[in-house]
Length: 121
Length: 113
Image (cartoon, rainbow over all chains, first blue to last red):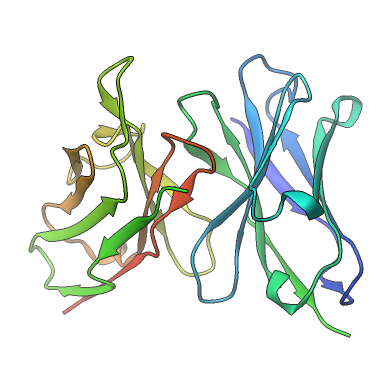
């Protein structure tokens, strides 16, 4: 059974770069046709897709965040990672990683448990 | 971006009664290649990640109780819980995956009356 787990610092200073990693277990991150994505949820608010990476390494970002986002894969560790630069308090959220089938089947399942990242000095 | 709007924002239903949540997209999400609607529903309980319930607007994910059903086409969709159970208390989200970026509704909070 595929499982995902986020990890990374829970506190980031304003203007710095947020870095998170998602470790995939129970399956290979190199599986053909899977996309690996990041979604965030500010406290008490709704869900926002940040971006996804295809098994081949192709990336797709939300235009609203594209200038600040980088997603990359480490196949040797079966992990994919998120970097979000120049963070502000508005980036405070629970960050989830999730798998999707991509293309035209881009629903998200399963999800990691999520990790809260607070942006504060 | 396709804007997803859910109604109501919150809903209180008695145990055993029907609960209905609506989701409207700002443009059609009907995928012409397979004549299916690119719409998913998720359930999120407090402190947990969203859980996929339904995709292609009406296909239940594996293990999802059959009291959950999805319907609709084009721009208007409905999630129905036929007989509310205590464990169904949660926030429910719709999501379109017709075009990028995938977008979510604002959520509907379902409580017991």
